[in-house]
Image (cartoon, rainbow, N blue to C red):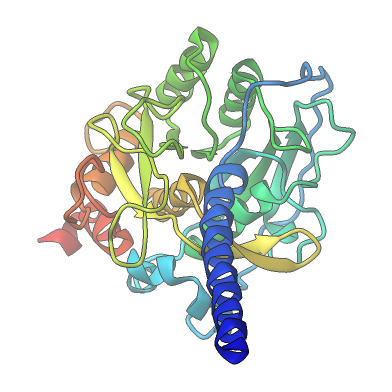
Length: 341
């Protein structure tokens, strides 16, 4: 009887351990999606007034089909970026502004690509001490190897930002030559923010915004604004990524689950959320911009770039993700008339 009693106790302990492990996995996944993958935006310190900028050399080509770490970046293959590279790998004339927590200055893969920077936060540095901005920049650069990056720090060193600060960052970025503006952040609506979005679009920029990680159809800003390309997140099975927002206001979807990319101090890691999905689309936009032409005579190509991205998506069996999964190869092909015949 004692042996049976002891056996029952052991089995109970094993069951408790297994259940605890399952709970931990769920909580860890939720933390990855909600705390690490897009930015909290409410309790903030006022932005400082000290704009600063620096200009460096043109970025070097460090990504290739043979790079071993691309095997970990499943999203790049999923959107057919390697096929698009047979046509274009981007161009040094295309600058992607990363409005985020900064880009790590010492990262071996990214430092030479950053050609301008500014700090709108109360942080004493434009460097990335939080890790989010570097991760987004790494994904963008991996998809568009020849593009340049602009470090526009609008979120502080705890990942928090304010709509008015983001609005300032958008205006600064487009006034300093950004053609693509990556907004891997989510916040409440703001007239100032919407005005900045509309201004950037009128100046020829494509604005890509994360749909948010609420797991509902509730609108998120700035993604909800008409002149932003709103991006939901998907997993490797083309299902909606954990906690990704969705809805009729979402334009496209892109990989946003367990995305591998650069982190500060030359580290690499994974993030889950629509932030990473937005970064994938910004990379595609940079590729398309490198071959796009103004076909309607309005003096800008951002409308052609956005149309090519939306009209070339791969349909997936998910509601609320707009046109479907972005496809870099098809988007580039549709931009060049001789290839789309």
